Image: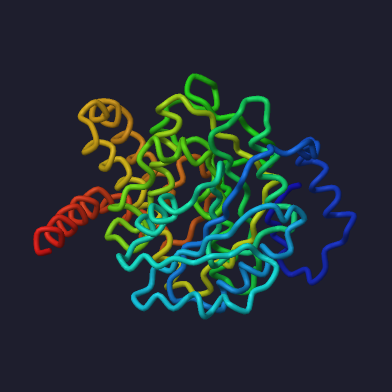
Length: 358
């Protein structure tokens, strides 16, 4: 219902009464009624690469869903493609696997999009677990009166055991600027000033679902964005923004929860902050290369927005209000913002070269 970081100083105990008072002052979102879900076929996709233990953990969470009416497709993006042997012992799922040898999360996502025949397609990463009611709430999201073409859920920390995990949640996280109440996102509404910037409050790629045909209609995911490319991130941002650009509705839907295992070390966290920021400006460059019509729109807001982000001690999340970001994370985020567009151009050249060699 709510999250808050408390500076407890030298105290070793904080009382329930103190917690209650703090949260009462903050206010709670209104509960969401658990209505009827959309009657539609659904496939959950997990794209994975050389993480067998966490993959099994994610699959086991899917096997415990309160709504079992869905299929699971695992896309193995490793070189060997042996994931089928890893998941053979997982019971209670309608499960199949395929192999996408070309590296890159976007390529794996697009392979899944070509494989599925269901009405809806949902995504969860192999470093997450699904809340037991995740599927049920996704289907309720698609039954929303505004008939969204995409539903973006909430990603919460599965553990907070290291300083790096706490810092990610405090200074970055998947939910900065995103409240805990549902929000209808559509171009022309106050919730979407522009589908390109400032980015609306849709969630991260590890907890999102689409009407399959609508995702295919925008071309799926850009193979030059995302993990496994020089640009590192931004593929889900582009897909969701394109939906808004084409008149679709996206539902920010906090009741659909997954639990994410954050990076455990400071070094990994710095790379993550760099990647998220680089993905933002790489996304802008991808749009400009898609069509010249985006150049003027992006030119109007990006220089001012990027300058503000760099000046306001900020790591690429346009609406972050948390101050005191550690200097190492600030540096990583700023480098990402400045390098993302050029990394995308390098990735374009790299892929063209590979295709020419073939």
